[in-house]
Length: 129
Image 1: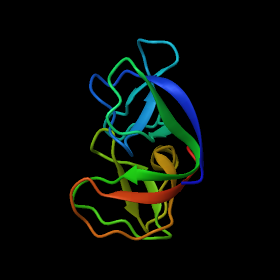
Image 2: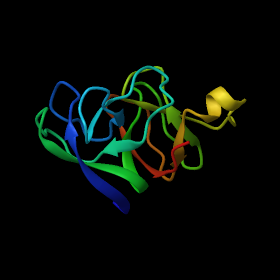
Image 3: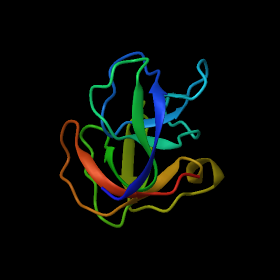
């Protein structure tokens, strides 16, 4: 899609889900896990679907990636994207971050619009805070 990806071990506890927002594993070296609710430690977006837990998987850490948007939420080009209140998912809004806590949740900006639905992927330019 136009991003820089690295190979890390999937330690989410299940097969990988394309577009999930992830962070460094707290129990395994060189691995990732799904972010928690409104987690400010995200660093990447899962690139591959269906990679078994414990296997290596590509994770996009910079550039453009398809990000898994919180169910029932639309994505609009130009909106800023942040770690949502649903683990492993992002949300998009046209409101600017209100302060440091909100700013630290930011993962990038939408470059395409998608209507709300279930398991919607939207292209975003990444820049984790």
